[in-house]
Structure formats: structure tokens, C-alpha cells
View 1 (tube, rainbow, N blue to C red):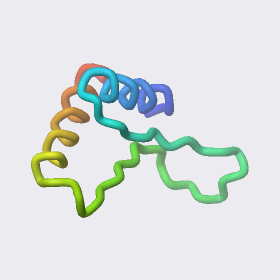
View 2 (view 1 turned 180 degrees about the horizontal axis):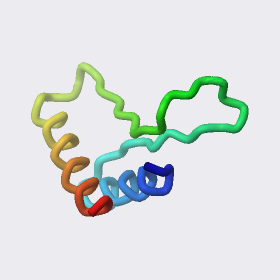
View 3 (view 1 turned 90 degrees about the vertical axis):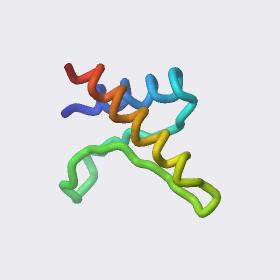
Length: 67
């Protein structure tokens, strides 16, 4: 999966569901070889419903982008 797919997912989730997520980038200087991904930030103020909304939104948008 390339960064552009992740960035597209991030943009569509924000536009369609008002959910802000971050697609991670890698620098040529990075020594860590972890895979690229999407970063989610959760705080104690988020409810279970908030987290479920994010999960469903990312799942739906990812399926539409990757298919």
C-alpha cells in the first residue's frame, strides 16, 4: 500500500464523515522500517460511539478506495 492510498483515505474520511485521521509518511532519513499506516488519536473524552463511527468510516472509505 502506498502513501497516496492512505492520504486519499484520510481526505475522504474527513470530507465525507468529518473524521480527522493522519496518514503517516516516511522520510528517507528514517532508520525504522515500520510499514506506513493511518494514525488515530483517541482521548478519554471520546465515547464508544465516537470510536465506532471512526472505525466504520475508515472501513467503508478504505473499501471504496482499494477496490
